[in-house]
Image 1 (cartoon, rainbow, N blue to C red):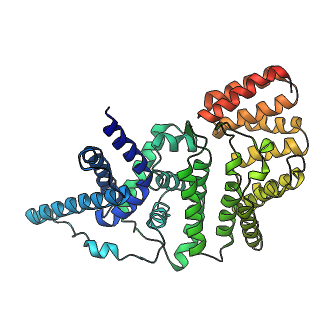
Image 2 (cartoon, one colour; image 1 turned 60 degrees about the vertical axis):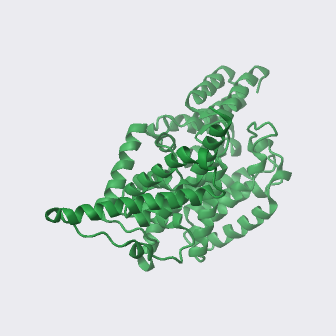
Image 3 (cartoon, one colour; image 1 turned 90 degrees about the horizontal axis):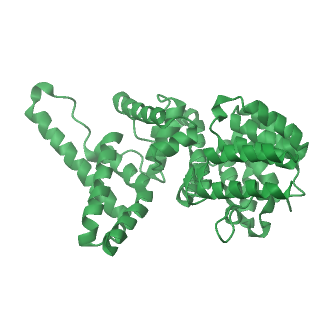
Length: 417
């Protein structure tokens, strides 16, 4: 590969992070998601073919958007011509492009419109999240399958069915208003949170984070806050993301190696962000009953406001997890509560709960269960069993930074607990 072609390939790969912008801007012209996806894929292929000879544009995302919209418009014109030529097969004419564009231009970002479309109640909850991660975040089917703890083939079928359902049911591409909005919001919040967490720790690859996804999740949460400033759940979600993101710079050392919370340099935490996040937690907790995100944000706030690992109030964190499990049933919540239990009461108590969770098939491929068991076993001095648990976690982990950390932890067992 020549230097020039390598430069073009790298530019197109960087531009892939603008996939959601390009797709969202193309859907209204294409008229449906699948046609828009095809037009966007054609635009990226065209970029690879033409940027080498014509030069890389100063604004790749704008170039891709214009190209994709032109492709989509060409396809619609050809389809309209075919309909006129085959009157016996005539179907209702699609709306004109100008009509498609007139759907709430006061919404701050096209991606928000796309998320609400993906989270339409006609779709199953699992399909809503999967479709959003595919269309809004540009994650591969394999990455989404890993996030959901299901086989890739299962996830591929789920995404295909969801896109077909949107087309067949004529689900509108818009943010709902009035009484329609609140029932749709819960799933949208869950999706935005998953976007952030997927970026906070990348499911695979050489980097600990996917900063583009994490930043996108934060942006979307702020958009929702601007749209619904009085909603306590929105405040809770934004607080949770801000308080988690405040620790971002301390999560890895200068060489990119993972640094656990207990070993992080707290002077590197973003204090302005923590102040903002704590204020949002208070706004969220004013509403009763407190929602899932408000409680999760409160747990994050306890960590962020603790002056050191040794001074962490594990009793308060455990109590917050007890409240959380009442409003949100999740095996991951149970896992995190077991870890809190191991610090609040002792590693033996945490290990017993983790062993109970090992029977849950939803956690069968979840690497953090084995890693948590390994840590409890290490603290109990059960070195041989800890090494086996670290090995199990390594088998399930595809992030190279986490693999390096787990390998180092396993090797350090020879030095004792």
